[in-house]
Length: 111
Image (tube, rainbow, N blue to C red; front, side):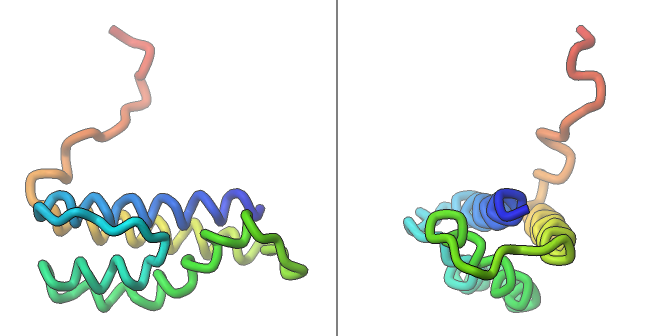
């Protein structure tokens, strides 16, 4: 479950960095979702709404690299998945013209 939580953090991180690039801003080399959300807030002033979710996901960036005695439980995984999804949807809604692009389909093998 720890690796799932890690990938949820990574997904949120990549979308926040994508938003910065979308706004012609070079993203910093950081895993700090709080810092990234605050940088995004300079372009769209409602990113503070996702700060609690960023705060929850941020520790999973280092947990897999530096294991602790507190392994994530099933509830942590479900919450991480929900929060990552919420952040992704939030960011995509703020990237005008991006919503419909690069949407995966169920028919990847069809030509």
